[in-house]
Length: 326
Image (cartoon, rainbow, N blue to C red; front, side):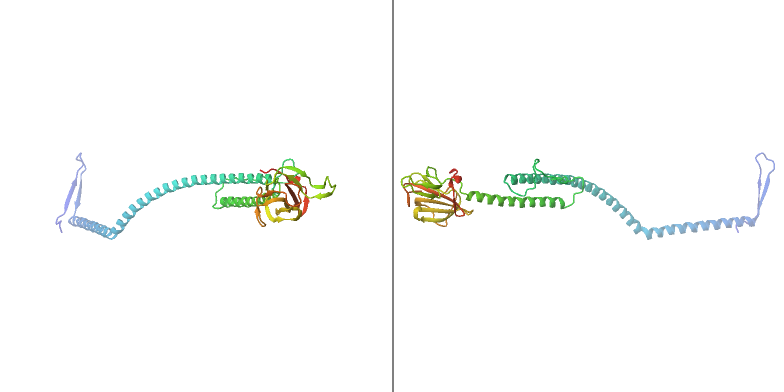
């Protein structure tokens, strides 16, 4: 025991009246001291336990703390990367929008040009006399319900899906190409017909006998003249009036030396009384090509060309087929 004696305490007010006495026994003092010692011990235990727990906690979770710090640093880097990617994506979106607009304008321009080609094709078909064009003049009788057609235009406000624009243009191109090939075949056929039609004069000179019934002055004899006679000097070149194939190139009775051309369109032409033949059977001659020279062979009274034009074997008047040599 620390306290072996009891103690009394006198408490006096400042003015000195009515003081009090406090008696503390030896037992009470020792009990209080024991309580203070116990409190100190408990406090020391709690402090030691707290620091021990903190030390153990730090040791146990130190790796987790370090990992958390590392993840925090990585998160900052990730956020920076996301920001950079966001700026890049924004720039790409702007570029795509720009190229998208340019693409749409290009498609629209190509469609417009395709429309112009289609209109030009229609004009060519009309000028060529091609049948089957769906074109009506304002003065012609026509009618019926109809809807306006948008040619060479695209709705640029709608999303551009991959393929439809190109597919539409490709369809239009193929359609125009098919029509152009059809027109080309038509014009080629028409050109072939024109080239094969005997429309050029084989030569020019003084016509001494017309087509049809003729009468000889001296003898009074009448006969059906199946061509025309053109008097020119001997040796004058004779030109093919149209493209054709030589079916005869030799002597033929009253014709003398004669050349016959088959023009492949029902037309045949004959050239009689030649002095010289410059082609052979089977030759294909072009319009204006020299096929022989004027003479007076066969039944002839002088140098001249006997010229016949026949349609499916029937003689027709050559006067209707005399053009120029150009």
